[in-house]
Structures are given as C-alpha cells and as structure tokens.
Amino acid sequence: MPDILYRINPDRNRPWNDLPLLPIRKELYENVEVLSSLGNAKAALARLQGRSVVIPDQGLLINSISLQEAKNSSEIENIFTTDDELYKAYSDDHKEGSGASKEVLRYREALWSGYHNLKRSGSFSLRYFIDVCGQIKRSEEGIRPPFSNTVILQGGSGPNAGNIVYTPPRGEEVIAEKMVNLIDFINDDDTYRIDPLLKMCIAHYQFEAIHPFRDGNGRTGRIFNINYLTAKGLLDYPILYHSRYILENKDGYYDTLTGISQRGEWKKWFIFMLKAIEVTSNITYHKINQMVSAKDAILEHVRGDNRNFQKSEGLIEAIFTQPYTKVRHLTEKGLYAENTAREYLNRLVDMGILEKKRVKGHDYYLNIELANILSE
Image (cartoon, rainbow, N blue to C red; front, side, top):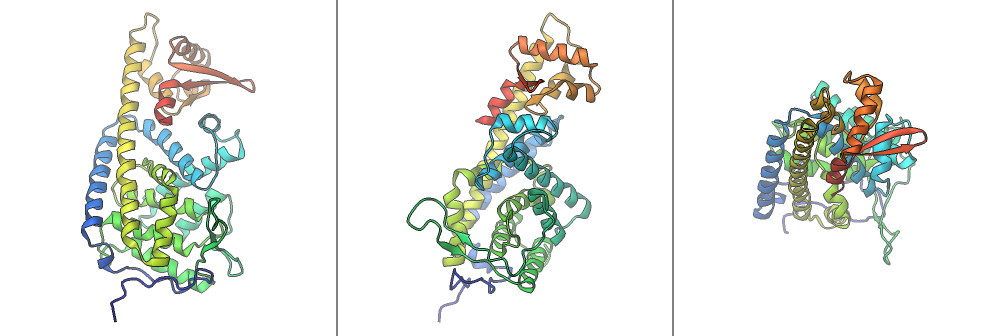
C-alpha cells in the first residue's frame, strides 16, 4: 500500500472534522521546485527589508503602503473603494467616507493592531486571531458557534458557481483543538524546525481550512501572513503588498487552497504563496525607491524656489506621509500656524506639486506624485 503523505477531504459537503493536525510531512515541501521558489522569495524579501530600514522617515512607508495592502486584501472579498475615497477617509481620521472605505480602514487598523500586540506579547494566541477578526468586522462574536452552517462556495459565473467546494470543521471542541495545534505550530520553532516562509504558507492554509469565524477569515489570514513576517524579524514593519498578487491571481489562490483539501497538492500551494512573496517584495521595493526619489526631487525643487519655505524638509516629509494632506496635519505636527500651513500648501498647488480639492467645505491637498506611484 503506498505511503499517504496527506489525507484529503473525502466529502466536501460534510464538515472536515478530520482535517489533519500540523505539522505536515517534510516530503510535501522538501523538493527542488519548492526550495527554488523559497530561495527566490527569501532573496526578494531580504532586499526589501534592507531597503526599508535605511529610510529615515518611516511614515513614508507606514501609512501609504499599508493603505494599499488593506485596499487590495479587501478587494479579494469584493469590497471596493476608490483610491480617492480611501485617501480622503484616512486623512479625516476615519470620520468620513463610504462604508467600503471605512471597512478597508478597519483592515489597516487590524493589521497595525496585530503588529503592535505581537511586539508586546512576543507570540501568537487565540486572542490575537479573535482580536484581528473582531477589528475587521467591528464584532466581538469570536469563534463561530456549532450551529453555524458555514460552507465555502464556488465563485464566479461558471456552471459550478454556487456549488459547495469545502465545508470546514464544525463544533467548539473540534475547532478549539485545531486552533491550539495551529498556534503551537506557529510559536514553537524548536519542535517545528521549518523555514519561516514555509511555515507561514502552512499556517495560512491551516487557518483558512479551520475557518474559525463566521466571516472575515480571508482577511484575518492575510493579516496573519504579514504579522508573521514581522514577528519573525523578516520585516521591521508590515509594509508588504502581499495581497496584490493574490488579488491579481485570485482564481489561482482559491484553486491551490482547494487543491490541498481535495487532492493533497501542497507543492502548487507553496509555489503560489512563495511567488506572491517574491513578486510583492519586488513591487514594494521599487515603490519605496520611487517614493524616496520623488520626495527628494520635490524637496530640491522647493528649496530652489525664490519664495522662502520655512522648515521645507518637514513640509515635504508631511505631504509624503499620506496621499492627502490637510492644514491640520501640519499644525498638529507643530510645523506651522494655521495661516502659514494653508499658504504653503496653496503655494505647492501653484507649483504643480499638489492638487487642491474642496469637498463638503473642507480642503484636501493631493500629493500627485505619491498618488501616481501608489496607483501603478
């Protein structure tokens, strides 16, 4: 009888309470194709980390890039907002904006809250996952109850659209056992000596397969990916556009997920996820370089203007902290009094650096170069 490397789900219409516990067999990832993909992903991620740590103004990365990650991840769940709506809502401290933009901003808050919680606690826990999902959904519901008939349906508009492709485990004790096992696997690097990127791939699949919440599992799992990279010291800040690749290859993401439960095809999953890290690390790296170059060029241009800008470096750093700047952003930083802040922002409009937009009686100043870089 052949050796079974991974026991698959025999019936996608029934709860998969026999979802195998971790770890998985080494043979499922110790092969040439996966290890080659791992090497490429690690090199790209290391280059991004090396570039990001030498930037003096981390606000350049912290706000703009995590906003785009939040937007991409939300679009995977068919939650759509425009860049313009999102940037306005963010500049308003989330007080304005559509339901979609607020939901995207909640994702960003959850991403950063998870990051800071892990900095304090040093390890993952069930509370971490509940809190991240709770922030995304603005809910304190927690683990889904056993009566919740949660199933995963085939998306799209093809002939199989709406059919059940997977039914996750059901029952409080079953879900609790599998979450305890997952968390132990994530935290215990002595017992489970697996490369961190491979471990992230395995843990992400296992979390999605357990599907512990009624809703928000996909976004929680993608936040985990980035929080895991920072927790393991592979990134200093959660600045990876990881969801962009998944969004652009959405069918591949779901196909490789179900490929494990239905056919035990771990290799395709590893290659997909590692490619996502490689590609998005390179995208983020190049966007950082573009933003730094744009900031330096604008600062040089402003310094050469015949009108004197006081604290010009602080001014340009401020307009690169987020795509939309308001007068209060400069006054709250202590850079200028209100009249001076407004005058300087309007001067930058005259110079073609900013675009002024008036919405509901409020003035917003869009950094044109930064917005263009982020939208590419």
